[in-house]
Image (cartoon, rainbow, N blue to C red; front, side, top):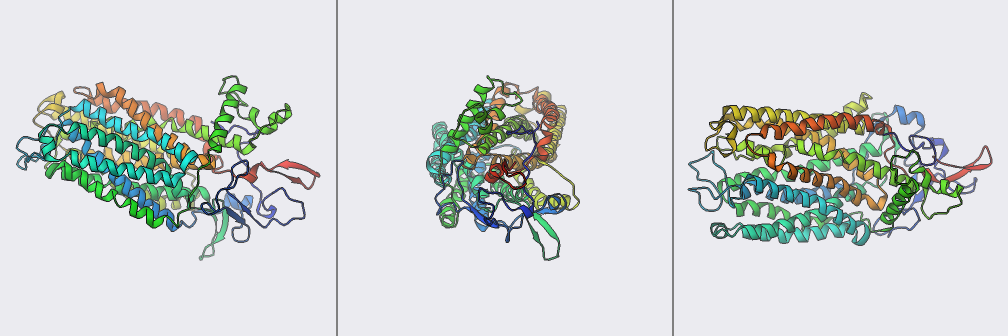
Length: 608
């Protein structure tokens, strides 16, 4: 979708050349070589300087590029503050907890205590192709509960983001999420004690810890990524000369992309704990499988305390959200409900309303922020169907693995190799592939990256469907392989291509979505917009719940193929609709919308 216009029919903000300085509302004789830009809302309410110091535009230290330099210089990322990396470790510890315990959910819920096992949920060592179990709730119930956990963990972030952006701030919200999660871990470990499982009393403590962990993760998750990017303070493009003598353009989009790629790698370092968990559950016990991620989780208070003083913290400011809602409602009313109206946003800009004698308290940038935010949300709406193709619907992947020859490997092992692929692939893209493309002047824009990720997921689903077909054809029980005592001779390691392609697609889709959520949101709504993106995973889980009846023999081939077909159709529509966003400006700034003196004409003009 082409960029809609804020007052004018243009597609991007045109920034001033280097020799013009940054236009501001000052007498013409006033110097403008450098100036502080306090972090303010559109109405100018400055944040607590002790918590979020303003950015200073210094044209001597950070010379802005000319239009020619902007199009010809190689783009590089800026220096990343140490606090950003410290917060990545915080995210790693929390994700180790979340994905670690989640890795054990399927077998814990689906299968009974193994016959001949020690009564802890672990298997009889003499039966290496068997699988761990505890509560014996069956495939569909296990899939439904697993999807419910994901749904809650990605719906609750809307509440977590709201209390952060409006009430308590992002950092206190992170601490609140950690506290709730800690309680959940204690209950989960106790509820998986052998005596509890053998007495058939494991369901109640599991469900209590289940809901608490989802709440804690939901409050924690939407506030970490924006806080990490906030540590990168000078979020503007400028030129510098490298030691080699090459002049380069330090680019905010390249920097944020680099931060998010490394951040996402840290997420998956934590998620890789799930591999250890599936071995612990199979050969030791479920209580120990839940305890190990819990131990990592209890590193969080230490990490947060160590980084507290150095962390750039953004206090709550509810006016941005209130203003965003006000502008959106006003635009809908003005357009009489036609959200596709050509001038949907233009008609509620202060300049357009002033022509009709209407005065409003918000600014041109506020309207542009609302437009850009809703466009990002529209892009996010394409994520749920993609999610269904990343690892399959519900527990189809681990169920498929249970029907294959494992030679002692846990049936859900391969599904948890997803983070290992990302740990390798994400830094590779950040440090090798993207810099290589930039040196060759090959543009790989935001929409192109997401489109490529969608196609990788489509290929992943095609492979999953083919493997499932071959499992049916070679299983002793034919098309009822899931409940068969015997297994297909096909090795479980044939799931690797499916897992790897799905993981690689995440690096293009999820990372780019985080970037869009941060860059296109009003400054004090960034957690909220990240939560809107995370909510798409909840929608995906809801779609998965609807498809639960189809996750059964003998139709599991279609459980893989149908989402792939849907994603293919969606991907074509997605690229055609949003391809122009590739060339859209990454971030906008207050001064881009200010009225400045026009020297030549002796009048004023808007800097857009």
